[in-house]
Amino acid sequence: MDEILKTYEDKMNKSLEVLQSDYASIRAGRANPHVLDKIKVDYYGTPTPIQQVGNISVPEARMIVIQPWEKSLIKNITKAIQTSDLGINPSNDGSVIRLVFPELTEERRKDLSKDVKKKGEATKVAIRNIRRDANEAFKKMEKDGEFSEDDRKLAENKMQKLTDKMVEKVDAAVEVKTKEIMTV
Image 1 (cartoon, rainbow, N blue to C red):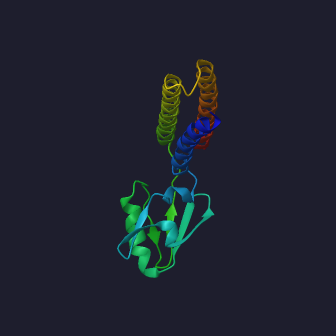
Image 2 (image 1 turned 135 degrees about the vertical axis):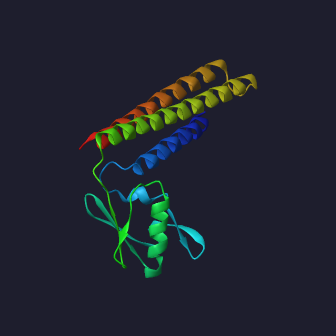
Image 3 (image 1 turned 120 degrees about the horizontal axis):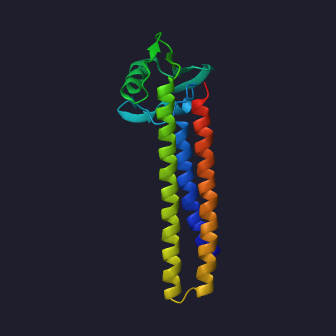
């Protein structure tokens, strides 16, 4: 039974990890290199993550500097950033690309915090769906004679406790990210 519960716990943890990576790519007014994670650059015909074609640094709170390993990539990196949904216009001096993050407006902060809450709710739904799938599997196992009724009830109880714990983690992540966004 513990192995089966572990399988479902792993699925819930994966949902939480997806949420964390989504939150890392949300811009909260400060320069965060993770906002570039989903941007791919055309590198000799192959879509390649920016992190693999240059050095990324954050010299100031509102600036990211990308130093490509090959100067010929500056045009491609600039184009990839402009066509992304980042909403920042890169500037370059021929050897490095600078991304300057403007101060977020109050309205934009509220929109971002709504988005954070939506993603949190979607993750909670995913976790509850995993719980439902687990409970259905337990009922089937009872029907097939692999579980007794007591085993099924025990497994469902453990699954509920695990679900509650994961939902608390999601709520905590939503709260932390919302606070980060709303901090001026």
